[in-house]
Length: 492
Image 1 (tube, rainbow, N blue to C red):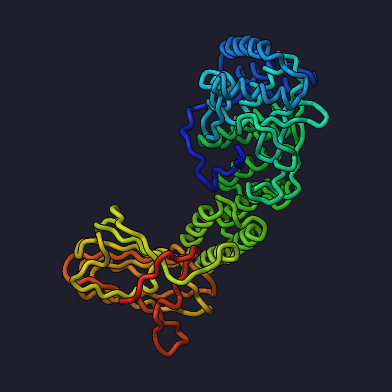
Image 2 (cartoon, rainbow, N blue to C red):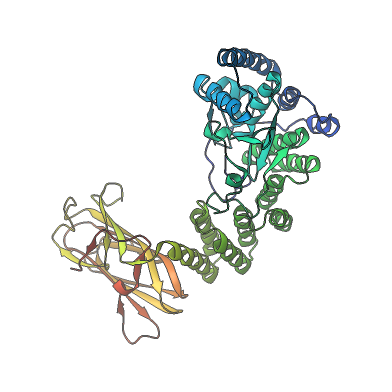
């Protein structure tokens, strides 16, 4: 589960949430006063009771698992070395008993230990609680470990042995969890630490609150995030989730305070920046949102959720008619991606055997969008009538200016720049002459053209005219893409 809780405002996490009630506050009250050595079994059973679940099935299932584990270790004469013990524990849990990690954060069964024992699937926190309870029954010195957005098991030794629940018990160093390269989106100087039992309980409350948040129960989820923070003020994930809950209810000032708390603890955390930028854009502070995205791109240009999040933010800015800011977000993203991947001439075009963009015959890189197929097929495998093409890539604007797109085609065409529809002439017409205008800033813009041919002659040509230019320019000089071309089609 190396994914951020609190990302729900920005990316789809999958799964289907079953209706849940709020957690009984008695669990948090018990954790406040519980002894430091409260048994993990009691933490698990009280958590299940607070969630309205019957802990009896959990006790019975874990008792059976304990008996099987004792028999397994007795047959193999469990070694004293911590690393070897962890290897055997991994073999028992993941090979013999068939447990597996499931990263679906929305599925309650991946959190509750009774359901995990029944399904033998769960995400990091639920699996960790079960393993800690089992280890305590076996007399092993196990504790919870935590890195940003992740919980795992640690065997108390010198040095400690980390037991990674999401990777079948693999052992990894603290440096691995810190992720200095930033590929997993870990914030700078990320702490890796052991958890007290109260802190583990706070994680359970926070994750339960996340489930409520995903079901739209913002009021109750906020109560649980605050309860988790009262028990464990350093639980940064709860601050992140609290910020998302505030933002969803348009309490943007409160949301920004929560995201600032995350960034104070986790310097340059990419998900806090994403959520902060989203809140700023939703609050109408478009320029501040763009500045936040640029800070993020400077530290984490390869973040997996980045492109999707920028697209959503750009859509919100376009809806608010903040055209310049929507472009600035896109240009900043492509500037970072281009620095990593490089930029090549041409635009990828997908050719379809139908007018509805469903049956794709081939995708290739075209040097220009200037074709006169007349009564011929555009390429092998595509009919000469009733076909469509979608070009999608980048438009490199050399200087800010007012640009006019002139299009001649047969039959229909639509053209978008940075998600904004600029040309819309979607009709059957043998001589379709149309145009669209846009103020564009310097840089790489998202560019998409949809075209369909109904019957008769086929062809399309687009030229671009900057206001300051004396005459229109071929589109080819503006078309780019981020991946090297395998094939560049000659202009016809």
